[in-house]
Every structure is written in structure tokens, then in C-alpha cells.
Length: 305
Image (cartoon, rainbow, N blue to C red; front, side, top):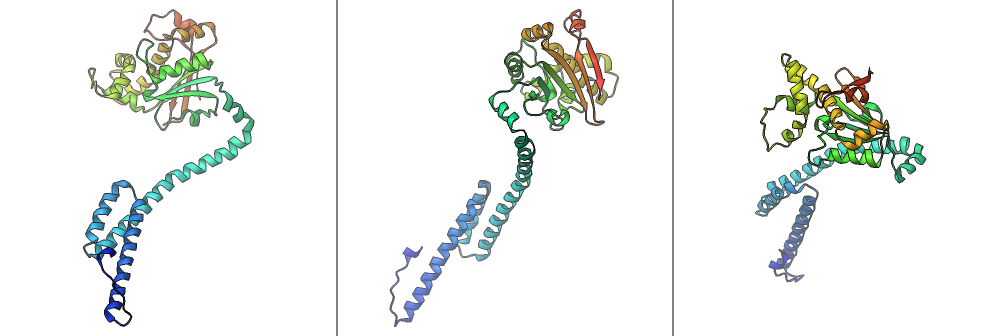
């Protein structure tokens, strides 16, 4: 903007004084524009275009709009910082507490974990945010190799590759875990989706294409509990699907072999977070061998905590 004006300075000329005053105003205006551009960098990109439009309008000598733009950018940038701080400040404090109270107090243990892991458990649990196995059952770092998916389902051995099957192969064959624990829970949204969907369903739905893995649990539930309220049907299916998953685990040759030899045990668990109870049981391999495929499994050592 300053290059558009020709300034000649003559101390004896009043017009020269006016010209100098005009020049100062121009440079001050340029500084304000730079300050405004800096403010833009502090706000999310989704708002920059709006702020840029306000800046363009402000260049038409409308000081009210200039002030509005400055207020807008300052408010939004402040709000973003405040929201991020609320979320990550809490997370930061939890991490620092873990570092001080757990990590530093058990430094030798964590140094060993840095070299290798040797968990005793593979836990297959639901992805639901209310049922974190480490929080509910107190698993500490290094104790449980964990995979979480919608409705804690185990696909059949013959089906295509999934992250759950990869976790099974790695934990059983490489880490050589001694226990597999499949944990279901109350009011499971995945089971509700399974129980409410049509048989055909929507093949374009990722949810449908996954929960259909539990179709046999749904069928067995309908066979014995079709006269019950939908909520009670879902509760029945939540437990039935755990046993169907345990039965499917025996369909993996290298799992069945280890269970038969006694080096691997299969367990079911059901967490009722409405009443805060946990039910646990173990697959009775000997009792299950006499059953026809698909007819269920025998269990033992059932207990409620």
C-alpha cells in the first residue's frame, strides 16, 4: 500500500507534515493487517476462510467489521485451546501419575517388559468403552494380550483373515499363552444389532457383515427365548454368543491340540455392569468331545464374583 504514494519532505511545508502523517497511518494499518494474519494462524483451518472474507470486507474502510473479525478469531482460538486442554490435561495427569506411581516404582519389571512379553492370558473382549478388561479385572502391563472387537466375537477358522484371528495365532503360537478368556457384557450394542437385524440385512453395512458372525447364537436364542421381551432375548444371546465363540475356538487345529494336551485352557466371562457382577466359567474339554459339532460345549468351574 505504501508504494502507491509519493512522499516528498520539506520541513517548511505544511503539506509535507500532512504527507508524513499519512505515511505513518499507512504503515500502522499495514502492521494491523500483519497482526490479523498472525491471529488467523492460531485458529482452525475451517474458520480461516471466513476470517479472510471478513478481512476483505474490512479493507473497504468498515472498522466495525474489522473489530468483528478480530473478536471472532480470538474467541475461536481461545475456545479450541480450552477444549483441547480439558481433554489432554486430564490425560496428561493420568499418565504422569502412572509414570510416578507405577512405572518408576516397578522400573525393573518394565525394563523386562521392554525386552519381551510373556502374558498368561489372551483376552477377547468387546470394544464398548464401558468394559475395559484392564479396568474391570485389574490386568497389569504384560499380563494379558488383548483384542477387542464389536460384541467380542470369534470368527470361524474357515472364514477370511481378521485382526481377531491374527491375535489368536500370534498369542497362542508365538507368545504361548496358557489361557484364552472371552468376555461378554450386559447391554451389548453389537448383540442388540445382531438380534434386531433382518436375516438378509444390508450387505453394505460393516456392522452387519461383522455381527453376522454370531448368527448361530441368535438362532439358538430365538429357539428357546422367542417368547421373552427383546431385552431379555439380548441378555440370553450375550451369554450364548460367548459359548459359541468358545466352541469356535476349538475349531482352530492348533488351539484344539493345545487344549487337548492341557497346555491351554478356554474360559468364558460375563460382566454385568448394571449390577456389577462377573460370571466366569471354563470349557470342559473332556465333556465337550462327546458333543456333536454345533451342539454346544460342556463347562465347569462356574462362579459369580
